[in-house]
Structure formats: C-alpha cells, structure tokens
Image (cartoon, rainbow, N blue to C red; front, side, top):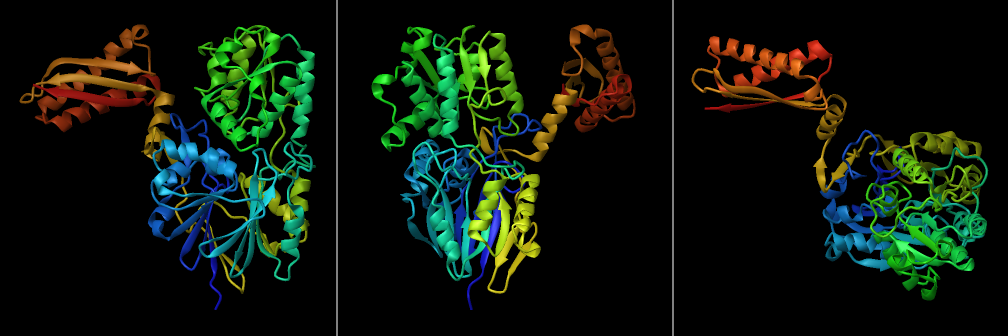
Length: 555
C-alpha cells in the first residue's frame, strides 16, 4: 500500500505573510518556508507575527528538512525563531541562504542547522520526498518553484512568482520544465499556487520597466540629490537604480544595515554588478554636489527606526533632508504598513522634498503574477487538484474561481485556511479543518512575550487610558492614613480636571470608610473597594472605562 501524504498549513492562507506549510510522509516532515507577518494597526507594540509552531514543536524529532523557496521575510523571516524549537538542514539557493544566514547567526542558532545550497534544476532527496528546484521569477533573485515527487504523485508548489520573460538578470522562469513535469503520464497531482494578485487582471509588468522609469527621473532632475528607498532583499531593484544613477554620472551611497549587508552578499555571489569606484561612503556623499549623489536606503515600508523614517523625522546623523531632494519610494506598502508609509511621505513633503511613489509614477512593479499569469500556470501544469495559497481569503477565492474557469473540476478546487490539513491518497484528497493550532504568535522583543490577553489590555489602554489610585490604610482599623492620590494617563489631564479628581478621591474615601465600619479591613477587600468605587464614579461621570489599578499600602 502506498503511503499517504499529509499537508499541514501553518500560515499564509488568509493573510499576507507567515507563509509556512508542512509536507509529511511516513512520519517524516519537510517544512516549506517559515515567514513572518508585519503587525496590523490593532496590534500595538508588536514587532512581528509568527506562525504557531506548536505542531512542529511537538513533532520536532520528525522534521528532516526545511525548504526555502526565496529569501523574502514573509517566507524566511521566521527561521531564526523556528530553530529555537528544532534542528534541521535548510535547502535553498545560495543567495536565499546567504540572506537568511545573518538572522540565524545573530540569534546564535547556526549550530541548529546546516545550510545546503541547491542549483537551478537540481533535485534533492529530502527525507521521504524528491524535491526538484525549478527557477521562477519574483522580486528577489533566485526564487524557486519546487516539485515534490511523492509516493502519491507530484505536488507542485509555485512559491511566489510572476512570468517575467525579460528579467534583470536574464534568469527566466523554466516554463519548459514545468510543462515537461505536467506532461508525464502521472502528471501533477496537486498544485499549490501563489494567489496574491489573483484579483488583478492582465499581466504584471516586467521588473525592467522600473529601470526605464528611474532613467527618466534621473534625466529630469540632473541637479537634485536622489534618495531611493527599496526592500534590501530586492537586489534587482537595487541593481537598476544603481545602473541608471551611475549612467548619469552619480555616485551611489548605501544606507541601512540590511541594505549594506545584502548588497555585499549580492556582489560576492555575482548577483549584483555595482563597480566599487562608483560607490561612496554615506559620510563622503554629503560633501558631493547634490546632482552627483544617489542614496539607496531601507525604509520603504515606513518602519519606525529605518533609514528613511529617521531621515523624514530629521533624526538621521548622516543624511539631512533638503528642500530640493527627490525621494523615491520604490515599493508598494504591505497591508498593515500603509499608515507608516503615508506618515513618512507626508513628513518628507513638509520638508520640501519631491516624493515619488507607486501612486504617482511607475517606480514599482509587483513580484506576483496577475490573473492571466495564474491562468497560464494552471493551463501549463494542468493539475488534478488545486489549492490556492499565499494571500488573503479574497485572493484565494478569486484564484479558486480562475481554476474552475480553467477546467479544473469544482470538487478538486480546495480553498484551505491556516490550521487545515490535507491527506492525499491514491483514492483521493480529504480535508481536515482546524487540524492543528495555527493562531498568531506575537513577538515583542522576545518570542512568546505577547498573548491575546496582553494585546486586549493594550488596545483598552489606548482607547480608554489608565487610572491609578494610591492609598495607605491602617491594617487593623482599615482607616485611611494617607491619600487617596490619583494618577491618570489617557483618561483626563490632571491639571485641567482637578475638581473631578477631588470628587473621585472623595468617592474612594467614602467607600473605604464604609468598608472599615463593616469590619472589612483585610488587604484584598480594601483593594476591591478602591477599584470598584473609583471605576463606578468614572463610568457615571465620564461614560468611560479606563483600567483602574489600586495600590494599597498597609501600616
């Protein structure tokens, strides 16, 4: 009897980010990608969001390998956290491994893994499956689709992709190999395909169109300094900006730790061609005429401590915004980051800079295929069954409809969500809903530091504020010795509401006096009376419900 294959989705199905799923055969698990998600506006204080690793933590000894399709944070940013719970080799392109290595090394976890580079078209035995790495184009170089040859047939995972036939580096997607796999007698049993742009009609433009837009900008502003923000991992974008800047006689200065690091790796691996004599240190750039400089920096997502955010806030030590600067945000705001990006654009505009972004110029194109490219992939691979992945639920739903219109039977189009599992046998595919824990794991400084309860408290504090009442009582009689004193943040301003605060103190004092008369002088009872009386007073007078924290000291 042929062993069944189980696929467990831990993230990336119903959101942008946290991409991670597991492929299990005969008790051995291959983890595919391990990404993070940027926090949303209702997650105050959260740095990033991870998949729930409970399933993998409990099966740590069964994990035989981790496959990295490409080096974006939403697919690779969680590796340094996953390796705290298990040890396994990581397979990926040399560039993907090089970009991921720094985070793993900083976490002190290199001993937990072995970084195994794979080449375009190479097939590797990873535990129970043969993994074939097929080149695809994306917004980071050397991305892969991976065909997993399993006992129940071939499972093809596209990774993030678009069909770019004129890529910056000439590495075109190997559509011929995908078609060859699909044309074999057994074909492709299951296709897992990127859904991010399923709602966008037509084709996604080639990455090379951004180079043309940058060339036009440099020529239109020959005397102005350029500051161009991009993802540090988007090395093709960095290459195009640098090429066009150098062609117009400018020196390139790199700014931002990850930008400097990633460009160094790209140069070392031959992915980037930026001549050393065309670059300058950021400190030296400030002494050159504005028209001779192009700064390429991090911060395209408005991250609070990124280079561009510090420049916009006039807090960067080396770069000070000038009224005649041209600032280019060569990226699209990831969902959840829109407010931060808008804030940076507004601050730069207030400083007099001309801000160019994807809403007013063609300085960014997506790395994800649009509807026609997704249809092409479905027609090329002609899978027996189809599961849309990588996207919000509406994206996956739109992709599922594309699959149905492409001729895949309705009962073979399966829309899954995080936590679901598929079991694939010779007879068919069954779906188990909510098979494993797949909630959000919030990171605030350290892993596991923030839970739903903490987030709920933070949201409440942000909306209603906090009031602290401090009182000292006699431990025997329960009489108030000193206080009550009231300290408030986010409820009312103390200096503008003295009369209201005096009334609040009287309400607490009366409640404590009543408790003392009834003989209730123990510590917990006094605290409860202080909290309840103050909370009731605040609700009656202001119709608000701030967090009330009683601090009772006994003498």
